Length: 109
Length: 115
Image 1 (cartoon, rainbow over the protein chains, first blue to last red):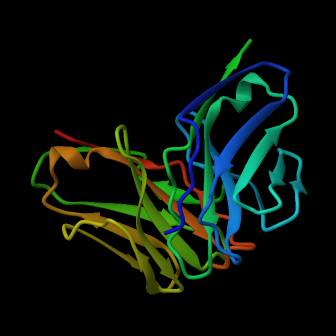
Image 2: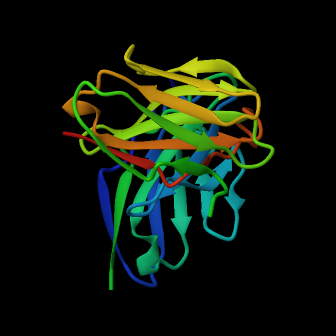
């Protein structure tokens, strides 16, 4: 199973950008980088995914390093509703989808 | 609303008992995944089914079993329950299993309490 490393927790102020890092130094060429988040008392929800190029959607942006050994999830303007656990996952065809401990993001009003 | 339905939402039972958790995937989704989330373990992958067939197995105990039926709903059976089985059990579904577009949609979970 491909491994990722994330900080246990992070804090950010409301209405400021948040950069959530993820290291995946053993990533292979066919691994997709996926991000999910889990709001309190809810199931995880998909945020974004990418392979090599940076990606944007209505929720966030994903910046992928040129060597693909790390990536950063960017929330452009954090709100209190963004307080959640954020999971960075590597997905490859036929492999189990394993969630790590993730990063608990605290948003300060 | 993810479109994935899990029942029951809450379940309290005693040690040694057996329970069945049910999951209805989103309409059209062929793949179902089961995860266990306890306070100290995070989200643990249990098992995955695709169109009725088992595709991947994680750290699922022998006391646990699952299946996916022809109508694509899935059931997770937990038997000889122990206190440590108390957890949130999540079901997720996706239309395909390809990593490039196989976004997982999670249900709200079934909270199992074993007394």
